[in-house]
Amino acid sequence: MKTLNRTAVALVATTLLSAAAWAGAGPSGHSHDETFSAGEPGDPKKPARIIQITMGEMDGKMMFMPAKLEMKKGEQVKFVLRNNGELEHEFVLADTAENLKHAEAMKKNPDMVHDDPNARRLAPKKTDEIVWKFSKSGDFEFACLIPGHREAGMVGTVVVK
Ligand SMILES: [Cu+2]
Image (cartoon, rainbow, N blue to C red; front, side, top):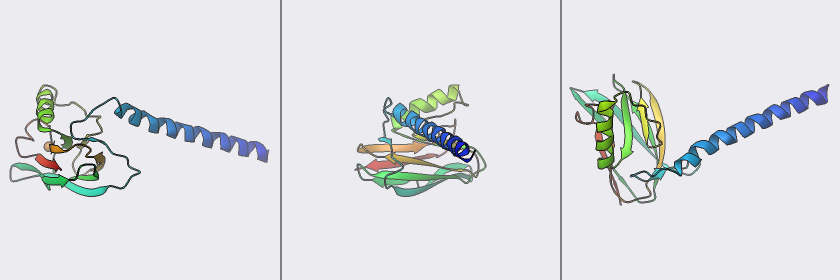
């Protein structure tokens, strides 16, 4: 009886482990098929510089704080995002051309949900994280693409040297 129980426990543990391994393989396998203008999704197991970004509204303006960042090419960053505002906001990391194109698409489909490694949508008072590797040099940006928000000031710059 005791032996049987132990086998059952071991079986459950093995099943859970392989389920976790499978879930882990999905997103990373997926990201290899995609290219991103601002670099590539980071590896959470590797060291990262932590950068806190707060989003919100104040006096009719919308903003990210800080809104100006500089990176070294190859640097990995963990963005710790916090929405301090009263509205939903997003953080979409790309180059300006891509974000403007994306913003146009969102005007036609404002409820568009992002399931991209370079983007997060946060409800008020929520936090989230993105680990990102700035593998390319250039000028990039992070913006909120909810219609009207980028225009109201929700855009920040990232220079990668
Ligand atoms: Cu916003």
